[in-house]
Amino acid sequence: MSVTVDRQPLPAAEMGLETLGQLIAHLQKDNRLVVHVLVDGQEPDLSQMGTVRKIPLNQHTLFVETADPRQLAVQALTEVEAQLAEADRLRCEASELIVQNQNQRAMEKLSGCFSTWQHAQESVLKTAQLLRLDLAAVQSEGRPLTEMVRDFAEQLRQIKAALENRDFVHLNDILTYEAAQTTASWRGAVASLRAVIGQLQ
Figure 1 (cartoon, one colour):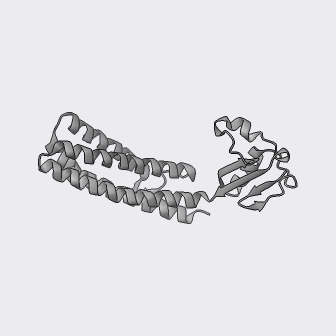
Figure 2: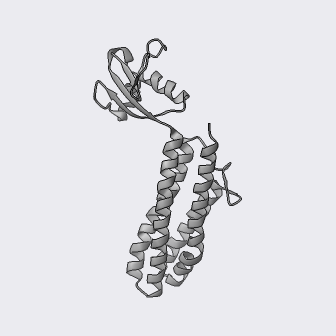
Figure 3: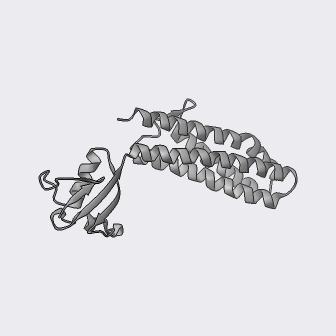
């Protein structure tokens, strides 16, 4: 039976590692994130993580792939930047359609914009969680990111209220002025997170 980590044999028994759980904990100490596991050539059922962690290393052939959480975070933030550019395009198109009184088409564009903004927010929060960063301690534009996330949630509530009241003039004002600032703020947040990740050891 053998343990292979990132295509390199690992002397697990000599290191005192007896279970898959101990192996994962050992890799995490080296700031590695386990991204793929094969036990005897099969993917284990990760919904049964308690059982998976107890798998004895000396009775199975294990292949483990890891990644640097910082690299994963940078990749996620790069995707967010591309999505923010798309959200900005959709926001501008929605605004133009409202001016042309094509509200139904504007709502379709706005729907895409919403999902992109929300995905950006989730990515920022999950990146911080993955790297154990305190968003209150990360500053962007002189403000903690927690404050920015709160402001964003408030802006979404205002947009929702304008939609419910069918107040397209107010909605267009939000899209033209406040939402443009939101996209810029998210870009600033991504840049701040990148800078913090760059300083992590």
